[in-house]
Length: 223
Image (cartoon, rainbow, N blue to C red):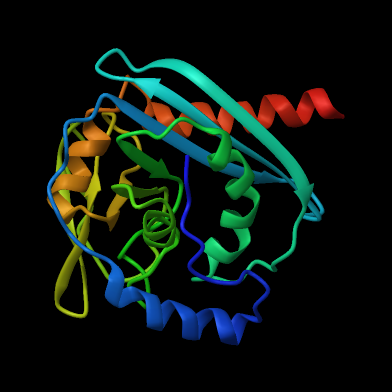
């Protein structure tokens, strides 16, 4: 996959915040294209958080069958700072993404525009790849929303600064909701559709569920 080199990664947290404020104007909405392939990405860390394992899994739709995967390892180069996840996780993902086939859609375990500066991990990754991206997180970062009713498929809007920035979706009956927001080239409602087409009976969508599972398996093999 060809990636855009839009910024340096050798930044301090203060510089990273300034860059987010600069790049957010490039984020666009849009409708979900025809999705035949979707890529899930995930980065896991050692207990000391000094090393990472990053994985990407490509799936075909509509069957959600994995067709390709790749992983990488290395030392963590950016500290954990709330709101700056992209500067911690995209550098580990870049070598993997360069090897991966170009998908129609990318889903990440993180946030998109539901972010203090409207520029979460999914937004940054969307600008670098030029692809529709979705942030599918397990917890709320900013804003507020009502909890969806417990039946599968129920959802409620997430609002921040008076705008709808995503939706809380009950992806499985009785499970905790997912917090979905678009990263790039998608509107909030379209991002929910993208996640819904990737559900397969688990709380998490298959692309990120399998990518996370692979990081865990790969780390265990490497011990």
